Length: 299
Image (tube, rainbow, N blue to C red; front, top):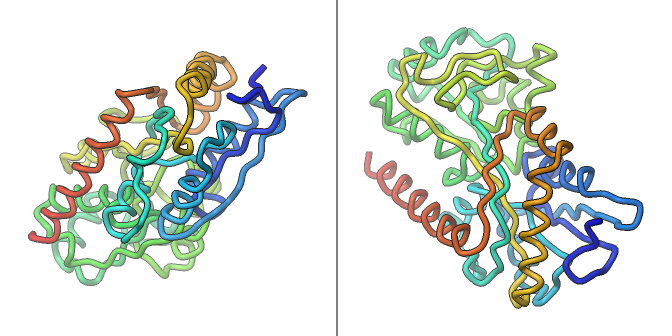
């Protein structure tokens, strides 16, 4: 039984973006997989500024061992581009949970039929294309677009990138044609891909994935391999024993058949990293985002 690191019977996961996005999907799968008859799991949706609002709330809940926030590269990117009085380094790193591929999406009726079509259009008239993602430009969706642009010799700033607060906001803009291309996480759009309302031009993995019928970017001639990731942060001030309970339970979760099914169904890959290794990884990701945006601004 997962009773929460304090022994209480209520555990809360903060989702720092709108419902329907990748953080929300991760949190709700966590609650469904961890749920028992004796423990109540709540999802608290607290969007704003790419996750910075949720981060601020978490930072105030000092010493609460039954609260965690789902986060990922999107939050790292938001902190790079959004002034904040709060820092990830002040919080308790629990674990990296998973990695998720990015996908290049267009509306079903888009004239762009292949990744090669997109590359040609992007090189030929970059200002005519509007891209969008469910994260800040320094988050996974924006970074993936920057990496694609650099790989084909296009200045990333020559085309528009619109930031939405998660996939729930991005989808209507894509379906109505307000944006031409979305770079986003795979799991948020599996239903739309199955229904045929959107099409995938390429995925960011080094090999094709079962849940999306599309070539890799490399297969399509664009030398980019990239993955988003998601993890958990807890408030500051947790005791070593409370942190150990969290990390032990995450390892148990990762080994469970039910969670493995969740990973497979959503196109995710297990990528558990805990303790000091996760803290070091967070620092490396902050450096990666800073350098990526710095290079992009000078392209």
